[in-house]
Length: 247
Image 1 (cartoon, helix red, strand yellow):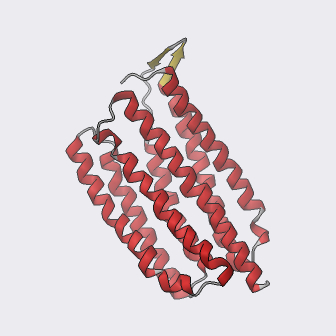
Image 2 (image 1 turned 180 degrees about the vertical axis):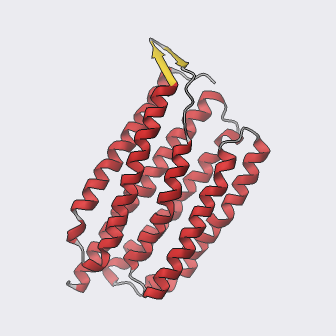
Image 3 (image 1 turned 135 degrees about the vertical axis):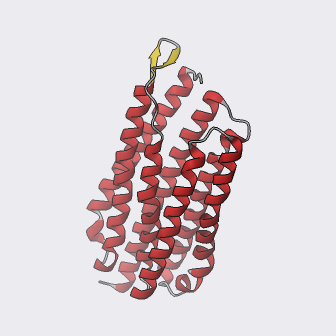
């Protein structure tokens, strides 16, 4: 698989940007934690943990990318060191369930409903990631499609639960936060749709270096939106609800 210097630099810069965004978001969420009511601080703390975990794994991905290729002038050559893309799936296994948990927590449902929905959505999210990994590491088109379809099953259940199962709970949110909660739900679904689309790039005509670059940059953009940008929504929801409750 050959890649050009421009392609190498594009991925290199995408990883660097992701590290900066995740790191800055982590600092912001942790230092802003006391700006919200105690009831919402756990949600904001989990938001910071998500970006912290992502920042760490992007450091590992970045270092692995550097180790896998050597750039001499206008030529990029493979060093023989394998680029370890499994870091992404380790990251997703930890962060994707937490993304759903932070949304549930900031909604401040009843304790029973919070536990039930957090466990259900967290398990489905983890299952979705686990089912996607065998397809990601396979070079066989049929195998990739099989695991893509299987991973889409828990994904669709999560989407259904977010839009149908939480409809009544969203209508009961404070008026000044209701729109933000609904927007956060939409952002979750839209940003998550990036992942299955990026997954199929190698199966719809992207080959060689082009496929590698499309996948790495695509996943990086999706992570920034799904974690850092989503985290800002969670924080703003917590702030608005804190103001309405005048803690």
